[in-house]
Image (cartoon, rainbow, N blue to C red; front, side, top):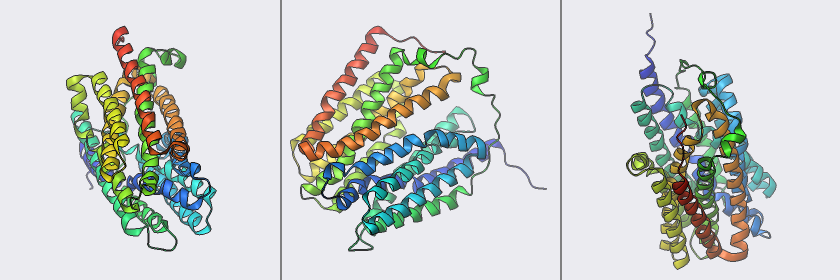
Length: 403
């Protein structure tokens, strides 16, 4: 007679599996960001202002697929839904290869919509890893998945460096072959996921009072949390998207641009292992403020020169600033809703966030084309200051705790 594994054992197994899946499937983000603007510029050299449009559609795909991810997970379970997400990514990678072969800019942008959709599934891995076990185990499970994210930064950029010239004189196509291969390996990893039984009553049912969404979004804490999240994420995307194109324009190689994205992604995920502890020690608002300060420092380094160290250092500061600002703002958002309200509030928050992130990706190319790299860097300063003043306003007026 077979013995069914206990829930904690299943949780440990699934967290390990998902960390490996994150290392494989999470690498698509590093590949897509590294090559989005470069591929767009190669396909559409007469309209460089639109070179970052593929990255904008990547962000749009994350926003569009956010709700379907949850629906598929409820209907088919995490395992099958995550495999479907990887298949969507493979479809996007194949479309990207074909678009480069055919010189089709519009098809390249569409391929990035599907790749971004696959990324929306990857973003759910950390929640799936924390499905079972105690709060202490959930923190450990999330850390394991974040470790996979750090590995993904290395794997994704290494794949780009080793495969982008595989089909010369056709550039970049080999990297999308590599992307499809990584997603295929990721599907094999996901097959080892075990189902986790649900033992919790729906929070929507147990909540004593569920407020109207209009009442929730009028709260100062919601407004400030959203503003700081948008400032952190949109500014990060705005600068990161244009960086590879700017580096190439100012005489640095494609390989150096890809390595810059590697350091940036590592800076985004690496601090996550201790950001939570810093928030507990110092509070949400100071950590968000520190993140915004790092974004301003990032702009200062970028404005100081166009040497390789300026680009790489600014991208590292950009990643750490995003980590502090966005994780802090996400934690602050939790004060705006009851347990039974979280799904609709988080859904609305992410829809607004990723819509603006997509617009920031598009604006990056327009700004770079019109005002150069310094124009992109300058935008970070007033937006970060505005978000910092919103934190001061919230500190002054206070914020009631949601129970």
